[in-house]
Amino acid sequence: MLTPGSHWVENSIKPFDSLIGRIDRLPLASHWKIALRTITGAVPATVGSLILERGAAITTLFALLSMFIAARPFQEELFQLTPGQRFTIGAIMQGHLLAWAFALNLSGQAEQIARTTGAIALASAVALWPIYVSKTAYQKKRRRVPFATAYGMLVCLLGLQQISILMGAK
Image (cartoon, rainbow, N blue to C red; front, side, top):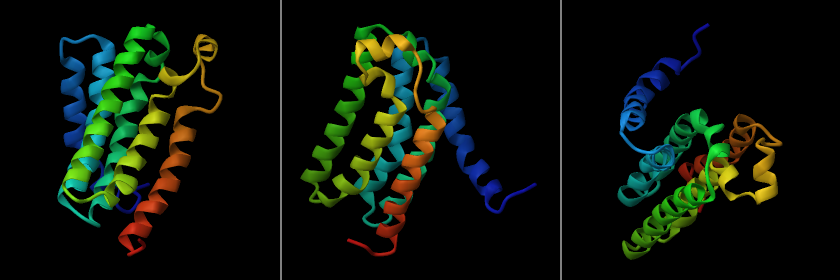
């Protein structure tokens, strides 16, 4: 059964899927590919928050969807990483978030930090959850709540935030 808007969503995601495919074909270690995929998922929100004002909420919604698509395939790989590889992924993502917030602050758009950077920081924390847990929890090699469930709940909450921003809430 065809759902309304599904054709638009499929066509919007095709270029993103091809970009993810290119990242996967790069001759890099898996942890570098994971970091690149996660940052690629955040790029729509990063660019949108720097260029648009209220319209950044739309690019943030697209980035939340993009990050899910980018992060879903590597969830099991996150449990196979060494501490150094986990640190590299976390440092790259956190560096991206800090540089993004700094750029927003310098450009006089500090309100976008809470609106966009905060939303993507939460989404990346859920997507990369295994790299942030304790050694004991990491050794269990499983999530208590499945990735799709945790990410879906977070996206619903963040989606409501972005919709209220679009509707004029401050």
